[in-house]
Amino acid sequence: MSLLSLQDLSVTYRIASGEVAAVRDVSLDLGAGEALGIAGESGSGKSTLAMALLRLLPSGTRVDGRILLDGEDVAAMKWGRLRAVRWASASIVFQGAQHGLNPVRRIGEQIAEPMIVHGTTKEPDKRVAELLAQVGLPAWRARSYPHELSGGQRQRVMIAMALACEPRLIIADEPTTALDVMVQAQVLTLIKKLIAEHGISLIMISHDLSVLADMCDRLGVMYAGRLVEVGPSHEVFHDARHPYSRALAAAFPTVGDPVSRMAPKGLGGDPPDPMDMPAGCPFHPRCPVALDTCTSIDVELWPAGERRSAACVHVLPETPGAPVSDAPVSDAPGSDAPGSDATVSETGGSEPSKTSVEAT
Ligand SMILES: Nc1ncnc2c1ncn2[C@@H]1O[C@H](COP(=O)(O)OP(=O)(O)OP(=O)(O)O)[C@@H](O)[C@H]1O
Ligand code: SF4
Ligand SMILES: [Mg+2]
Figure 1: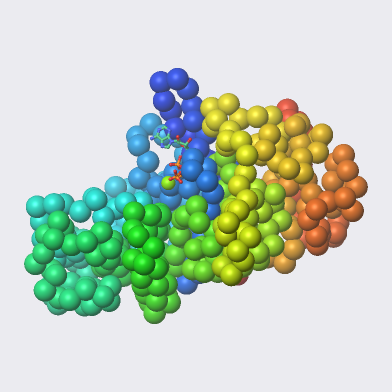
Figure 2: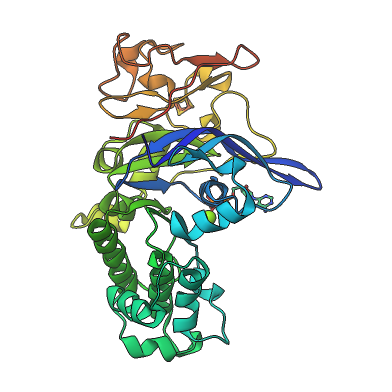
């Protein structure tokens, strides 16, 4: 059984002017000890997805589909159970979370609090010292206040807090965004080491594909609230099947390649407004390889090689509107590909069947 299983997860915010479809039909599984990266540009729904996992969304937000943590339905958890799960089973390190530390309480008290609440240790001071050592801080730092620490040190404290109750899953949402490059590298190395040592599963969110490729076994790319590609991280980074993932990967300069350093490739246009999605494939207004049919058909995730899937007509065995041989994506699966009942939906047509991505 997977540690985490998302089944057709959709999240819709309700605001005065209407509904914002922030996450749409996301299905995936995460195995114990596996590290999954989630990439995508700003507004693609990464943080919304993370918050939905532990029911941290604002009240009134609609969540459809299922979230199973160790087989238990997160939506059905009572408040007390959910509180226990938030620290003891899965914890989140937020984007800029270091600013969330209480400024008038010492670091040690803040790290100890969840352990005391959940009764996971009889010697909180000793455990705090151990956790500080794990994140590379001396024990005396327990007596410091947050303003006495640098940004990188505060982010280390947040990681210590996330580890405090020995969760099986850590969700790290842009954990290093506010840090300089050197400290960023230190914190990423630390997270990588700790999850490997403790066998913790990781969902790491970033817009930076190169960081995710380095940190994670698998990579999921989100566009306009959907997962548009999933696969082994190095393969997705170096040989993406979806045109959007390719554009995202090309936006990062290649180390040692002066041409790409001086002129990294970008992607024109803006992501669609989640309150006004275009018909057909949501990427078609920006897609360099769009076909005429892309304005009216919408492709679900489709097998795109071993342990890979992508939501693009070019990976379908028969590309509607163009011969497969014209497709710019190599290795398009044959009609005997697993999950070949997954298909394309005509706008306004019948509901397509969906593939969910299995953990390895
Ligand atoms: N509380 C909210 N109420 C209404 N809409 C929201 C709310 N939070 C996020 N959104 C909208 O949901 C969409 C997804 O936002 P989200 O924060 O999940 O994106 P993201 O991928 O994490 O972006 P970033 O990389 O900038 O952090 C965006 O269109 C955003 O404007
Ligand atoms: S389905 Fe069409 S528009 Fe969408 S990514 Fe593929 S080629 Fe581009
Ligand atoms: Mg975010």
